[in-house]
Length: 286
Length: 286
Image (cartoon, rainbow over all chains, first blue to last red):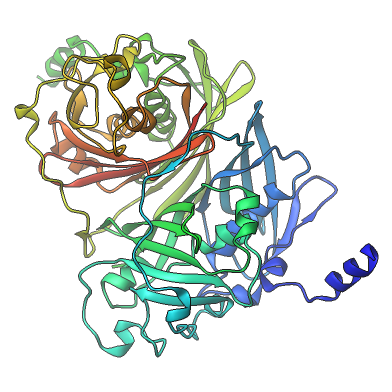
C-alpha cells in the first residue's frame, strides 16, 4: 500500500514552485539550479523565487541544524535566465543555532548572497503583539488578474483588500489615476495552483508584494530590491497546518529617499497566526 | 595654520566610540580590531558596537564605492573580550552599488558575519510616509541613569519618553512592577560624551534599544540578538548636519514566539528626518 501511495504521489505533476526552486547537490558540495520561465519578472527571475532558492540550499544541505529563523538576501547583480551555482557554508554551528553564508554564482560573478540563521525552537512564553487586521475573507474578494508583463504574478492567487491593481488587473498609472495617500497594501495570497505551505513558499511570498513606489506614486520607473530580510515566526508544522489556505499579506513603505525606499511587511495565516515579518530596501530610478 | 589646527584636533582625546570601533588594515588586507571595556555588555561586548565595527571594515576599505544603504549582522557566536580579525570582501561592484561580505573571526572561529550594501545616491522624488511621533523634546526629559550591569549604557545619554527603566534607572522587574501592555519604547539618545553623528554612531544606536522582552515582560532571562538589519535613509552630509543632537528612537516587538522575538525600530533626527529603520530577531531563553 505504501508503495502504491508513493506511486500515486509521484504521478502528480510537480508544482511550478518546486521546479523553480529545485537544486542538485554537486560532487564538490555546491548546488546547481536553473531559473524558471514560469517565475520570470520584467527583467530576469522574480526575486522571491531567487530568495527561496537560496534558502533551499540550506534546507537541502545535509549539515543543516533546525529550521529557518532569519533569511537575508542581497541581490548583487542581475541574474540571467539559465543555470547558476550556489555555495552554502555553515560558518558556525552552536548547540541550538546555526549560521550560514550562501553565494549564488553565474558565469563566474556573484549574482546574490544570503545569510540564514537556523535554530531548533523550544516552547516558551509567547505573545503576538501586532493585531490581525480587520479585513474581509479571501472568499469575499475577487482574484486580481495577473500582470501580463510579469509571468510570476500568474503563479499566485492574489486578492487585494487595498493597495493593488484594480479588478481589471490595471495599475493606477495604466488606468490614468492619481497618486495615493499612502503605500499600504493588504492582500490575500497563495500559490496558484494551491500548494501546501512551507518555508520555501513563504520565503517567496514575502517578496511577492508589488513595489511600494507603484502603490504610492502611479508611474512606471525601474525598481529593484537590493536587500531583503525575512524573519520566520512559525515552525514547519505550523506552516504545514496552514495547508493551501490563502495568507494575509500587509506591506507598506516608511520612507522613499534619493533612490531607495524600504518596505516592511507581515504575513499572517488565515487563522490569525503571524508567520513571518519581512523587510527590504529597494532601488528606484527617479 | 592647517598644521596647527590638526595638532589642536589631535590633542583632543579620541571618543570612546572611535577607540572601540578602530580597525587596523593588515598586510593581507584583513582588518584587526579589539573589544573595548567601555562598551562591555553583561556578557561580551555591546552588539551595536560589534555591528558598527563590522561596518567600519567597509567604511575604511580602500575599494569602497558610495555610502551604506543596508547592513545586516549575524551574531554567530560569543565574542570574547580581546582581539579579532575581519575580512571584508567586495563581492560585486556595479555602477552605483556595491555588495560586501564580512566575516569576524576570533581564535579561528566565526564570531559574526555581515553583509553591507553601499551605493552612490542621486536626488529623486522623496517622501517620508511614517510620521514623526508626538513626543516632548529631549531637554524636557531627565536622563535615565545607566545600568550598572551593562557598561555600554554609560556611553549613551538616554531619555525615555516611555518603555524604559524608571527615573531611578531601575527596570520594572527590579522595582517589583508587573507586565506592560506592549513592548513600545520611545527615547532620545545620543553618544555620551556628545559626538558628531556618522554611520558608525548611527549603526550602534540602532542596536541600543533594550530587549523588547524586558519592556513587555518584567523578568530577567538570557537574551541575545541573532540577526540585525539596518537600512540607512540619509547620507553622510545629512548625518553630520545632525551634529551632536539627540536622536529619537522608537522600537517595538511584533511577535514573541518559542524562543525568538523580533524588534522593529526607527531613528529620527531632532529635526524630524527619518535617518534609519532597523530590525532584529532575538533569542530568549524562556
